[in-house]
Image 1 (tube, rainbow, N blue to C red):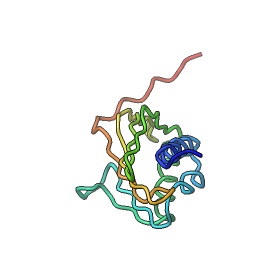
Image 2: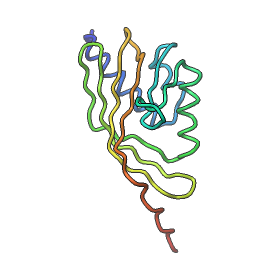
Image 3: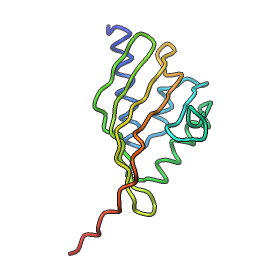
Length: 136
């Protein structure tokens, strides 16, 4: 039977697999009912704080709707007791065609076998220009 650290590491792997499938049920299955999500961007020093499964789910679904090609390429997951760290490259295209490509990370808090907190951090990089249309 895997130890708790290995199980928590696997939970982070499952979480990002679900993010990249744009699978809200899969993402929320990794989180507690009272999950707290601090976004990478927002007016407060912690970004924007979103609490509870319904609101957190809606926030993730909005990202997937606004950027249908959004992805997180994970470069590393680490678990330290009840804390986790995932490092990734965020890529997505906005409706106006501009692109975001930036490194970032999430700090997590585990409660048992689920995540009770996700705090996102992303490099503040200017948007990249839209890709040129391919010609036939």
